[in-house]
Length: 308
Image: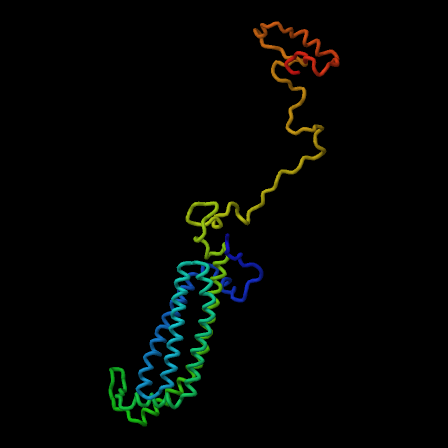
């Protein structure tokens, strides 16, 4: 028993604008976006996990804990994006459906990562600047030029704190913009995933061009790529009905009653020359047939004649 849901009908949902803009198969688009999302979340997760040791060495336990949480969330998105690549490659309806719904979870996780990052940036300002100052103090700084570094020196505590304060101020706006931008991009990825899921549901969509067997052809392309008649051509009309009433005859396709089989003459059969060496009198039988029929009993022998 087929448990496949029926193709979508009715008014298209809000994400259907993707198929109106891009009317071809969305499979390569889904695979490309999932690949980019997997690469971004992989490097983001690695960066968060690398910061854990730095925060622990500078006694910033809260920052270390939040880095672990953000790294785990990034890796969860990475796994979902890998699953999306696999689902688009296999083109199986349950896999595509699962990735479409998981893309909503990805949008929520990405929004949560950005929001947590913004909250940490403003609530743990002192710990962030203190860790940055400790990491920068005592380092060597170079002032570059066209032909390479021309001057350098060691960064003291005051310079390190001043530089970290300016870096924190610049990072405030970038964190907010990154949060809004990544949330929008993740939502767009989810929209494309659901549009591809709708394509897979529709048997006439480009996504199913080479998946199902052709019904009228045995070639590499489906039957709807080569319709039997052009949609814009003139229609095929039947012949018009003849004018006037139908002919005076009850049975259709019956020859006229005057037509007799070969050798049949006026109700009797005329044998071929040389036939009839028996005792049957064909002439008497012909004259008997011309007269009125006589009443006979049901047990009597029927009269002769080849057509009785």
